Length: 392
Ligand code: ADP
Image (cartoon, rainbow, N blue to C red):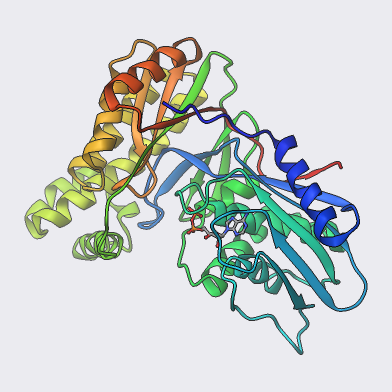
């Protein structure tokens, strides 16, 4: 199985610097980076006012750049697979001539952040490079937005001290310029991720709490099933609607206000499918807070058990898993030293995340390789820092 070697930050930075010199005939004067998302350790529902519990992975988006004269910005990406052209120019954003979304679509993530940044922004040249796979559910877009915001802070000398404001501006860019009604988790973890910590995010209060995960004997393996099942597009809105209906039937503003006992007691009032969806969400909210407490106490067995319960609930009650993800979880759980494993992200393909003793990682990868065939991609990772400034 291809074990993805994480291209190091330095390699990505060098790529960006080289491309900058090639395109703009001068070296960049500053650089920033963000880590790609979220290994979502637990908690899948950003709707229903639930909790999510991600960590930033050691995948990185870098932007290098310099201030320029005049009123035209030049922007280039090293990323493959985005729409042409890969080098663009656009006028400086002003209240009289604001930026609007357009083509190429990849630049909208950058323009959207510029439009949501407080205060004037001078002309600049910039190059983006990344090791986050694009469109792979690892939030390359949020990573790009947060890298852009951090870049603009450097460019203007105006650092946003309120990290929540920063994350929300990036989310707004995705809503308004990329037309993607995303939740808030990806931007939060890209902004607030800290090396050695997972981040417990309360989607009701928007309160974020870092939970240490520094034990050197512990590893997280992200395994990409490399399958993505065809969706009709209605899967997520339907589930969301079912959860909203269940809450409404129980007379609550959201499932966050519903206990498992209340749900069980009112089972007869709900359609079977609404009950199952609600049982998943109510259970997941409970599991996620318990998991954060378990991690804090280094109770990895408990944490792992909650991961498995979460997977089973996503499979049976929420029905967003698939054969391949179930197989990856089953294989992982057969290996000594594995605490727990579950699907992560939207489901119907994509990745699993496994908490494992570092000493067992090689066995785990070998076992997955044998059982799943040569089709999965594994990345061993630890919680990484969110956005930061780099020295050139
Ligand atoms: P995900 O965020 O899960 O990777 P999305 O489809 O939400 O998937 O976002 C992917 C899109 O974000 C890409 O198609 C591209 O338009 C944009 N993007 C992300 N990273 C870059 C980058 N480094 N350079 C240019 N565009 C990027």
